[in-house]
Length: 245
Image 1 (cartoon, rainbow, N blue to C red):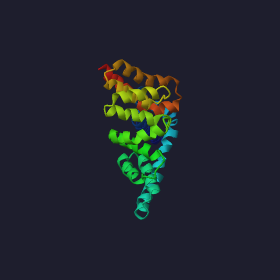
Image 2: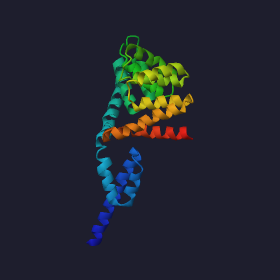
Image 3: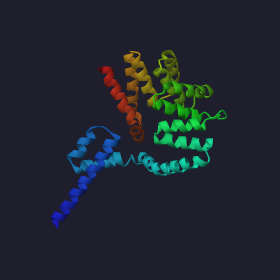
Image 4: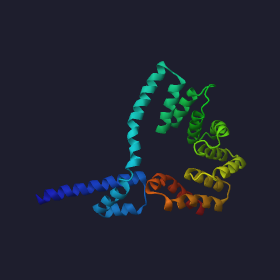
């Protein structure tokens, strides 16, 4: 009986570590957690309590994948009989949320017509084009959006337009727009893109300063925001290492 209990307990200890390690690999929190997980099963339990459970709010997004993919399949069939702009735009938005930016761009191409007056499909197509590395096309889509509303999506449209300018060599336009946006925006994405632009211009100290501003936000952020911002913290650290090298 004792050996059976020991066997069951050992499996639970292994399971706790597996759950903790899988989460660690996916979310990549501070590295010291890995040692805590490996040293003892209690460390894995503490990690689950401190990191995994609070992440549940973020993980809920994962459960939206299945209904979204079901709706994609429905729309892909629907547009065979009814290739309306509305169906194509909804399909494009779903592809966009899936991260299928090439398919999203193609669907936005079909959704956008001369009668389209909403800036949103142009804005989203512009983001998809940035993700695909087609910065010239992104500029063509984002410029009218920013001209119509400079604060569109809390200045993200203007910040992405500056990023696109930077990537096609329009340094003066990028600089002017980045400076304008960073007066009001505290987005880590914007700070990082500006830091990369400054690094490309050999303005190393300024680039380092903007990268450090991303990391400085860690101390005042609530836990759920720190977890959401981890990818930008990693990118900022990587940029600082490159600048030091």
